[in-house]
Amino acid sequence: MIQGGIGEMNPAHLDLRDNDITTIDEDSFDDMEELIELNLDGNENIQIDRDDFYVLESLKIITLSKTG
Picture 1 (cartoon, rainbow, N blue to C red):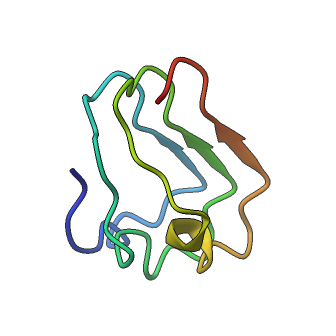
Picture 2 (picture 1 turned 60 degrees about the vertical axis):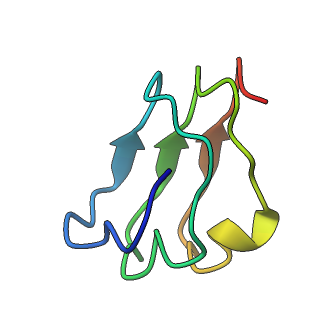
Picture 3 (picture 1 turned 90 degrees about the vertical axis):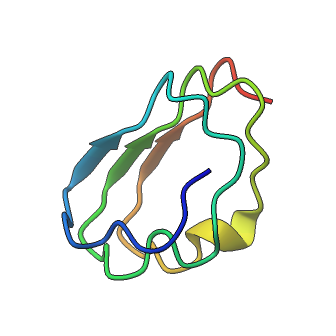
């Protein structure tokens, strides 16, 4: 589970693969306006709602292979 914001880092590329993430809170990506690429590969039981990424206006690439 990703809880709360992780936007303090504000990277352009965020690699969260193989972290056993199961859910993403709706505010997890607040303040990450610069995020271009997000890798969630290998989080096999992740539940994703497209609204989780609504704030990521710069997001161009999201990788979801081997996910639920």
